[in-house]
Amino acid sequence: MSPAPAYILCTTPRSGSTLLCRMLAASGVAGAPDSHFHSPSLDRWLEVYGLAATRFPDRRAAIRAAIAAGKARGTGASGCFGLRLQRGSFAYLMDQLDILHPGLASDRSLIEAAFGPVTFLHLSRADKLAQAVSRLRAEQSGLWHAHADGTEMERTRPAAPPRYDHAAIAAHLAELSSLDAAWTDWFATEGIAPQTLSYEALAADPRGVLAQTLSALGLDPARAAAVSVPTARLADAESAAWIARFRAETAGPIPPRS
Image (cartoon, rainbow, N blue to C red; front, side, top):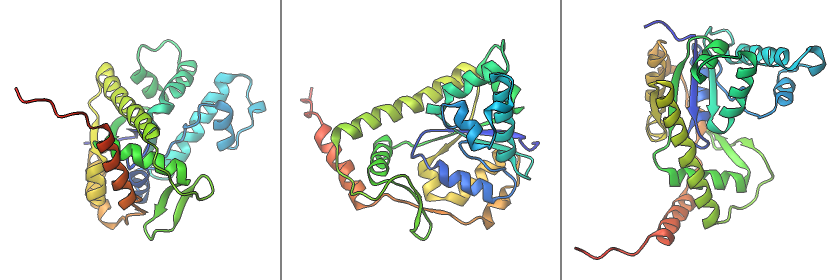
């Protein structure tokens, strides 16, 4: 199998993608996967890559420059481009690719016109309730990721104690389920058979899943052995208590036996 020149990690929030992306980058052969086109704003893309909008004669030229800059950052010296794509960012990216490559017949053809032949990875979390609780706690506390030693890696707001909120958990549960289903439907529509990966397997055996992913990309899976696990799990006893409480509150009456 030839090494993949590009891959897209299709995922949803709180699925373990930060852990997997950092380990892929640390392998030294799989580029620097990240959400290179996350914001639904071309101005923001240009700002991230240090590109002045006034340099470009039109929107199409600006999009072309931003895509090229993202590809360069996501490839590094490895020769393999990696992109993490959250489902919530998908539609805007596709709209920009349609401007850049008008008239193509499918989403997949747009993606390959921009990035070349692509291997698709689908990272999902089977326990959507745990995923919803994780997302709510991150939003409330401001802490999204921690280093392996427990120190903070990513914080978006000052520390605040999380508060159980049944309605917010239910909303996240519905949204995350819908986003993941949208990926599955899109793969079917585009005739794509992605390499499927799970949060649960990644959490249990990060290096094993890294090796599996490298192999799917045509890269040396032995690279995984030397990669350290860079993040710590944030789920704790309070997370488990919220999950149990939500299940108890949403449990319907036991139907009578027939």
